[in-house]
Image (cartoon, rainbow, N blue to C red; front, side, top):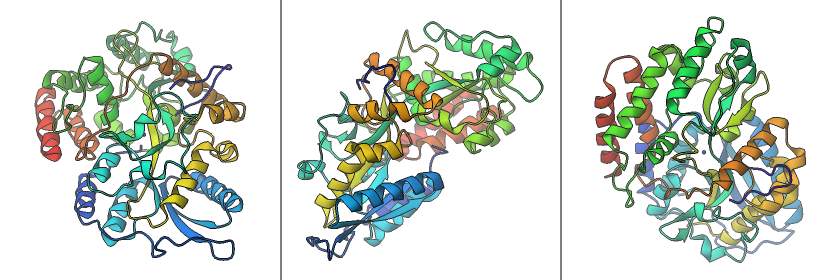
Amino acid sequence: MEHQQGGRTMKFVRKRSVLGVAAATASLALALTGCGSSPQAGKVGTEEDPVTIRFAWWGNDSRAKTTLEVIKDFEAANPTIKVQGENTEFSSYWDKMATQIAGGTTPDVFAMSGSYPSEYASRGVLLDLDTVKDQLDTSKFAEGTVDLGKIDGKQYTITAGVNAMSMVLDPTVFEAAGVPLPDDETWTWDDYVDIAAEITAKSPAGTFGTTPMSNDSFVAVWARQNGEELYTEDGKKMGISEDTLTKWFELNKKLMDTGGAPSASQTVEDGSAQPEMTLMGQGKQAMKISWSNQMTSYSGAPLMMVKLPGESKAPGTWLRSSMEYAISAKSPQSKEAALFINYLVNNMDAASKIKSDRGMPANTELKAGITPLLKETQQKEAAYLDRIAEMKIDPPKPFPAGSSATMEVLNRYNTDVLFGKVSARDAAKGVINEVNSNLG
């Protein structure tokens, strides 16, 4: 997600993947689309009889509280429109969306991320936003951020904010272990492994150098650092080679074998914990590969954010949408829905409440405006995203339809590698075969 730091303006996605069964449910439900999302049939609202649009998103109670406040402000500024907010925990959000789509009760506006825009667009669920371009202003968006919502040349989503893969460090753990902080302009993945092992060896029992990151977006960065893409240009199969994916599994196994990361069982437990309950959140981990916006979720000592190893020589990280807004293709109130999205991404009052919760605003004026309101950790995130933006790394194509279960597949095989149930090579073969089957 994103910010402004020191007067510079930036140029310019989760707890765990949806389970395979959820992805299958979503695919089935999306195939059944056809009904509308509201019975109002294009009604024109008045102050006495406003139209109602539904807005669905995922998140915790804090996000819900803030969003409802923003909705009230929007309604006050637009008395002919009412917004019905629908908040769901991320773990069940996509299942709920699939059920609503299948039942013809799709919300007018809804949050998206990952491969879901491609999947939903391919099944006709999403509105082509060019049809409501008069209600959506993207003129102040940073370079490249509008295109994040394009699929096959059509604008299907608007970014709610941007973030990027990063390495979060706990300087307190480094200092206690007597290990110097890494130079993120020069360090390599081998350096990362060595530093992690050294920190564990020089720290109290229960404190570790790092934990492995099992996430499809991170593997996409890994692929790009190796001159490849996670998926092919046509999105019909994985683009990452067996050798490159094998090296990723070997890295995670080496972290554990050298002591830089905890045991397989503790790694699995840590991967499913809420941010504040992870080892990093408890001040028992020195380094964590993380989405930039998640740093504010970890508790404990003040943290810092640096580039991933290898980024300066072979950059792979890109600025991506942490959350996106879409409109149902069946919404009878698409113009009102677009006006609401426009308020979310272009209104300073809304931005001052949301801040960087959904990522740093793509609107550069909003980003500059909220910067003084941000906490120290969010300021650090802003500075980091400015550094990534300055690298001018082109984003990959949106993850293709059929790839929503890739993270679950990677997690499952990575767990088997850590427990010694399968070799890194066989895991790579298994992932590629299974994901290619999903894409097919």
